Length: 269
Image 1 (cartoon, rainbow, N blue to C red):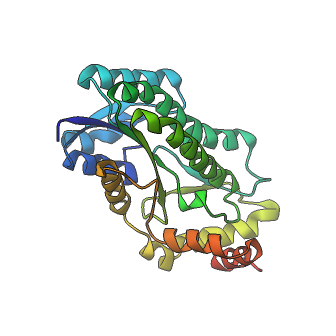
Image 2: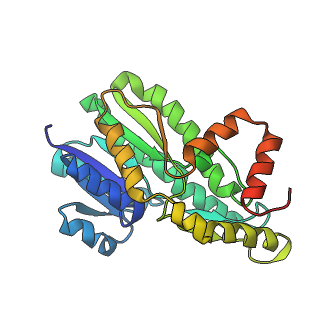
């Protein structure tokens, strides 16, 4: 294929790092973005172009897109991977932290889409890949704020897919399951929800759970498949637990799903 350009955010580790390398192997000129470029040295050593970018800073995002277009003349793939999860009871999580999760996980991703879209429309081609989570389709105790960001990104992606289609632009959602590189912060450490927090944390960190988690490469491979498909799927659910849990959520009642999830994390039903 002719040289195409891809931007991967959150590229310093995990899914982002694996995706940058995957896209490079497919022939793309890849820009790997992170807040600190020193964390991108491993990718730079492999020929991936490091890009300093903070997805909560509009000037930073503008400068990044402008640099890519100035250097390559185009942007073909945007992978919105930057994000994080902070688990805690709805009541316990400070509103500043709740807002920050939405700023990083939702508004940062959609602002980059806004900045990339004019260039993709000019090309009449492009793919925007938004990394959500199976947490954008299911729910768990203490996951409300984080999963709320993923539910929001799912719906925004659906609307954007319809809006962008007439311009030859694809919008794809990737819904990872449990991934070995994922790191979740815990906000409920004391008070009324401490017992729930301890149970959820123990479940997530258990040896059985960590052994079954999928490697980030599984997600990178799904992204590679999506961006090279003539007609990509709208969603790719992959990684441990993603498909069965999303399917279960569709076919059982909410009360039944409440019971399944509560038992899975060791809470009373």
